[in-house]
Image (cartoon, rainbow, N blue to C red; front, side, top):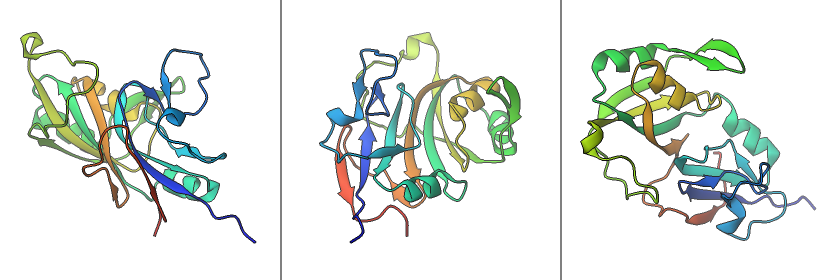
Length: 190
């Protein structure tokens, strides 16, 4: 009899480590605090501590490997420091040079466009307010997922990331899933 794998969709809150074990023994929350996940559950990719949004978990390593591949788009809503302009967006679309593993790396072409404030619920840690200058929002859709890639991309075009929320992986959307909520689903890939 084959083992039935389990799959989960969560809305990772700001300030949580995308792991079940805290490698640095930092005082941060871990995924296991959200739900009683079965043994062998793994996060598919990660969101850093300061990032929020859609995170997929599974007990199936093959599903994890497939979703982390470049077959699946990852969509992010990014609040940046300053009023991002079309010139910066065009650079994001073409690919920008970032540092990765001590080397220079040019990101693959992506989809990027400016949006109005999407009105996400406030996060637990306040983002600086308008007294410190304007902010704006951009959508970035990539198929790769290097370490802190989206943050490095916006910084490379002169608009550092203030808030980063992943809203979609492939056809799976964050939609109205509340922060910190977990839902179990039958499949993550079709």
